[in-house]
Picture (cartoon, rainbow, N blue to C red):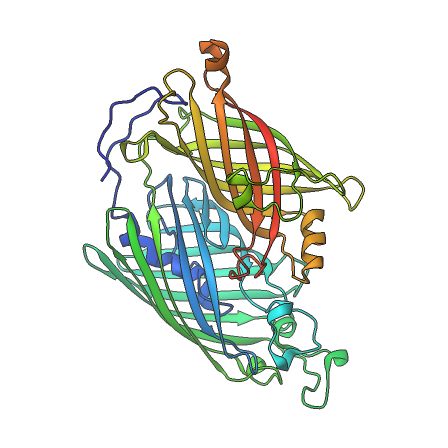
Length: 479
């Protein structure tokens, strides 16, 4: 466990932190598995927060295997990155981000936007769907009311498609009971889900132009799904927990009667691990914590100049043919200073990036949210503070960037607006370079803005294999 440390010369206003609450994940991570189930209603986060302590943040991963509802779909596997944050007002729970509208000790109301993990990518469609239009993963805007009493929890939520795909609506109601020990937690769950005709028809209907002799046209109506599940977590170390679960969903007759659906039961299992950074003494919501503002400008790299080559300096060439530029602002707040007593700070960032597509397609905006670690324990840091950083998170583009469109088209791969985000960087203190204490917390550096789909293994990220790289220069200051 992290012990209190003496604050040393650090790149930001020094702050020491005490012991973290190591039991956070073991006592609450199983609740987050609601968002990791598939298109069935079990993906709801009805059990509330993943990290119950305000200001907590976590990272993890989940492997999921499920039976496909589509005929000849067989089993499908999915990798889910877990990005977790629980603030006093805002939260991020894997495929869901939202705001707490109101809450007290036993109940609350939340508004959220959620990635719908349903459908199939074009390059992985089963034979029964050959010739049909792609049914993409969508995005829902929703609201949730929850009520807690002892070990029981009730949850009611409604969500509406806002991605202009299904235009469908879904309402969910569920109950869960928690049984837990010092290190473990189990949660049996029962959940009912009403799905509108538009929602069912988009994912399981067959349009007239898609019909063929063995696949007649079908208009799916509204119906109810029912899910039984068991989720659990086990804390193996002070901050590491194993998480897993299993579920079975009874599909409505409106879905089962579709000519592209194979069975009225769908089941799945999942397993993974997550790390809770804890809240320390520095929290995103704390007014006295420093705020980091970064402004940057950059250009996309040449084809074949991927992230690993850039990080090892074996390829740093920029695109000179059909190049595009980026510019933006990222704002960060510290989560942990001197992580585990090491010269390592963890900072959470969110910001806007503008794509200048040079007339090749309309310009667009991009939102990035990520956790970044900075190591500054180099032998020369007492003279010139040098930070080596690496960030991981999510990136949502208003329009798929031109460089991704062209690269993926050449590879005959699909694209996604939502992708994983990685950001390696290196910078130095401007104040240390010029001998000015006033500018000590101003940094100049180089970084890579990298979007990818984790090798096409994540349904959350649109099963995209590929992405983009931009090398940029930046100035960052702590206020």
